[in-house]
Image (cartoon, rainbow, N blue to C red; front, side, top):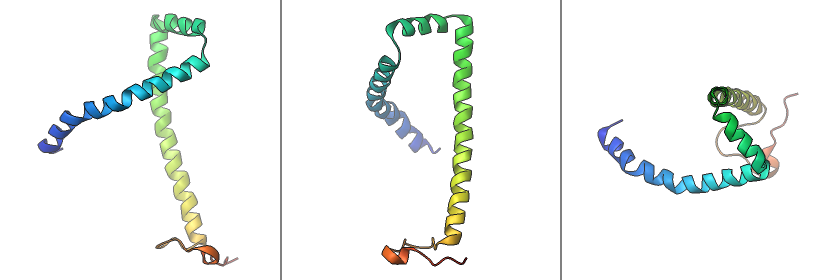
Amino acid sequence: MPEEQARWFRRHALQIMNTHMRPMIDEMTRDYAERFSEAELRALVAFYETPMGRGIARKQMEAGMAQGEIMQRFEVAYLTDLMTKFCAEFDCQGEAPKGQAARKPSAR
């Protein structure tokens, strides 16, 4: 990254992130409050403070990241296949036609 762009990121990234951080934390807090009782949350905290709990938390984070990558590959492959087949059936070049012109006669 050119130095000018790096300086811009150093100047602005944290400030911009901070404007989004509080709403995200508030939303996650509401979700946890609706999903778990106070006793369950205390038990979770106690568990995650143990060596096994810390190990499981680390593995959950790693698994979540790996599953995100798997889902991304799936979504790209699926949408590519879907749109390839769709565009083989319908004209996907240029702007989408409107109304009755939107259906290309089937070659079957």
